[in-house]
Amino acid sequence: MREDIRRPGGGATSSQHGHPDGEPGAPGPPAEPGPEEEPDVRFTLANERTFLAWNRTALALVVAGLGIVQLLPPFPGVPWGRHVLGVPLIVLGAVVSVTAYREWRRNQTALRRSEPIPQSLLPRILVFTITGVTALSAVVLLVSAVR
Amino acid sequence: MPVALPEDPEDLSPGTAAERTRLAWERTAIAFGAVGLAMLRGEPVAGLLVLAVTPLIWALGRYVSSSAPPQKRSRRLLLVTVAITGVVALAVVAAFIGHGLARFP
Image 1: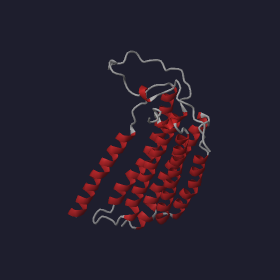
Image 2: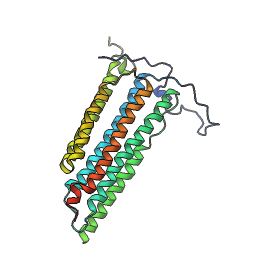
Image 3: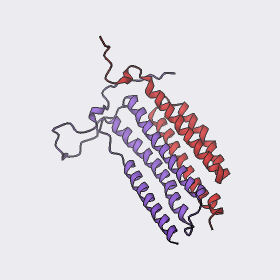
Image 4: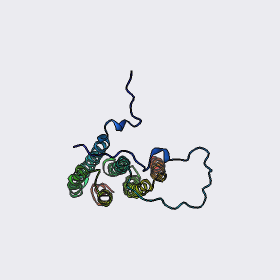
């Protein structure tokens, strides 16, 4: 069944995401939130797909963590090694999912008010955690090799 | 003379946005099923619980309607987040008391 999609109207458009040339960098007094109206449904659906994509990322992190804990052979001399690497990835899955929901709500509000979409925290969270787990892997491997 | 395309390709067939969203829901449900299958090996009860949630996620996606009221959309997405948080809780328990502990010296 084909859904009835409204044409883009006076709501948010991609041209509103960002500052036009010549706009001063320092904002003045905080602007009052504009009147809220339901955005073009295509923006709503795109926001929903972004939420779902982050949740699939969260599920992939859970599977990766479980794989490390349950499938890897134990590191010689480091009995806690698999848990130190796997459990943070599993917990990161919940963090990503909850943050994705908060950002979906925030983006939906911004779309309703025809405001720019706020920057997402999720890529930064993902980069820091994956870098941390990578560094921990190196530590666990080194400790395992030394023992 | 070439036909001028609209600025947004979706203007040719606006239904594709809804279709892509439905497919995204289906991919998410498949990912849930994959997590359930992965958990079955170490912790069968937890794996079965996650597999039981999979049809629910699938059903949520089937009823995606662009005309759904915002409150309903919000609740549906919250349900996905709650389900994933539950899966994480099960996975942490499985990591400590499931198959992992059996091999924990």
